Image (tube, helix red, strand yellow):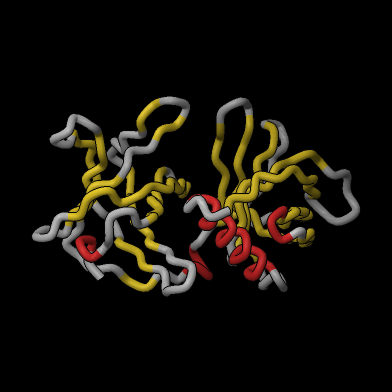
Length: 221
């Protein structure tokens, strides 16, 4: 598939890799070039300001993820903010390459954002934390500065979540090996952790949560 094979009104997700962290933004195709591998998509606002996607260390991929079809990914696209003929702003996205099948299983990060407690070792005092996101390969954890973990240290958290639309409660014990850290705003630190083994039922939970997110973003919730 090429970009100009997308259709107007189609939902897409921009995956932005910056400083080792992946950020996702949902938007919609509003114009397709019939002769070029180029599309125009709706602009994205964060805190009332347009996201410009400017920077030297940005890598941007486009994911097209219909629920009933194989997701596709366009790697390392070119994106710029442009003004259309009617005076409105849009993102121009181009790529000379075709898409590839997108393996969500290993790379997709599902935003969670739920509070938890974290233990450095078994049977030790737990500390307050937040599980930011989770994937089939690991999870990220946000803690206050001063709570430090060493690389390759095993940490334990419990992921408790409730899927309102399905009236379904889930709970997972997650044991992760710390592989990276990153200072954040408001005196917080993010730790990335990877699993040593698969967590039973976690991929099914991620799939359900992402389907619900796509359903809400398309206005069908």
